[in-house]
Image (cartoon, rainbow, N blue to C red; front, side, top):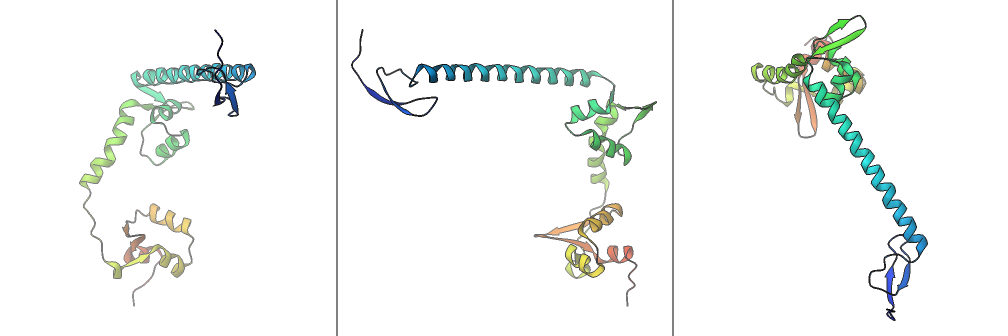
Length: 187
């Protein structure tokens, strides 16, 4: 059965315009058809490989979830954070560990309780009232007055546990807290 229709189409692969003889033609040539087939095959193999990788990762997570003791690598996989962050939590004393030679082991129950402690502490901690703008410095004022860099100021505030108040787009810190750090005497 021959067809005498001529339809102007756009090739699905190379996006060039061509004249098709049927309404089902997708590609301008055998070359484009073959390349599209190879691209589809390649993509299906990549998708299959990615699916296998995800399955393997999830299987590891299921094994990790059943263990009572896990190492730092397993904890980082389970929580989705880096190993360095886990070690920082350990160094700050926020996460309990056990050492077996050079190996660091974390109990699952300690890891689970790690997430509930800050919430309990926040509920028990009294709410600090905002002292008022006249009794506060902005971060920029502190930097200019004491000649300190932004990073150093941030570390001081964090190290001393000083509360920052955000009002609009500005961060405020109580003058009395900063004056204590820099040994400023009231006149």
